[in-house]
Length: 182
Image (tube, rainbow, N blue to C red):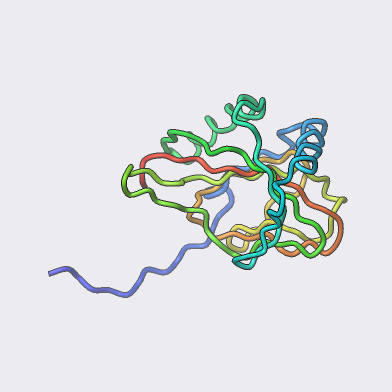
């Protein structure tokens, strides 16, 4: 007979254990180039407003130089999380204008047929902290760095959100790493 018990208490997210952070990793010039690309190449009619979120999005080509540039940071994060990664999804640029937000969610996605899992979420801050008010990224209750070029990686199973931008515009680069199911 299988034992029936109360659900275990959830542990609080501890940034030093659960979140990989490299502040100011990308230089400002590259961040500005990526924002420019995002503004010029937003998917037509793709202002995502369903599921309690609102932002503009644009994918980067699979051969974009950002893939090679971020490879080292992925290798560091794999060691940090002691995890195997098989591939990274296409990078996306997300623009949040005044009034835009992304409600609390998780990015985890399990592909049962291939026994792989969307395991890690990457967010790179592309806007200067002074270019927008609010629009903070929270993982659980932990407020993530807002400095331009900062790279943040965390397990895709952690709940997170982007608070509403009160004024200005916030841009980020996002993607997800896949590997064997946890």
